[in-house]
Length: 195
Ligand code: SF4
Ligand code: SF4
Image (cartoon, helix red, strand yellow):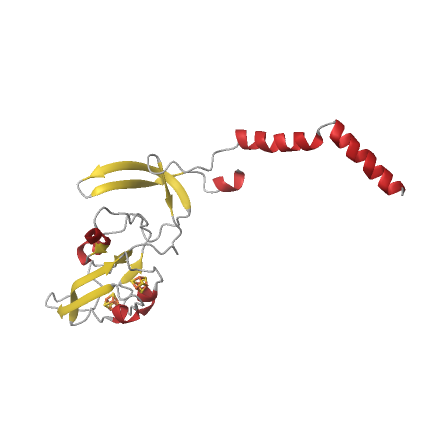
């Protein structure tokens, strides 16, 4: 009974002193002075995903610059949507990895599930899902990425940890619109924990 009375008095005091309103206002004020979580993408900033991120494909080379793909077509067989095309040809480049190289290696990103089965099936670690997530295009055919494009070095180096927002530049090039990240200018890595 005494306890109930005490709670009742406390409730009245809370109401008279606007405690709940002040609590709410303090949250609003806290967010007013804390750093914004908004990423100013694409004009000024860009999110760089973690290494384990599965974005658009990339084809790897070894340290000597030799193409790692041996055109075994295991990735084609592992792909549940049939979006990879590999056409092999005899390797007369003398690179010394295998007898075959891909004449054509292409992937249709519209049909891709980004499941990573192709990466898992590859015996030479030639194919990898990279960190490129800017897949929008104006033309259906641009969604099919060919070998030449996939062999270009990734924008974010393989060893870069990622998981952060960095400065970026919005650029219009002949190939279209690009948001070029400057990975050496990261926003505070733990910024999201402080808001
Ligand atoms: S990520 Fe999956 S769906 Fe996409 S190409 Fe590889 S195996 Fe096919
Ligand atoms: S990417 Fe890998 S699995 Fe696919 S054809 Fe080349 S070597 Fe074989």
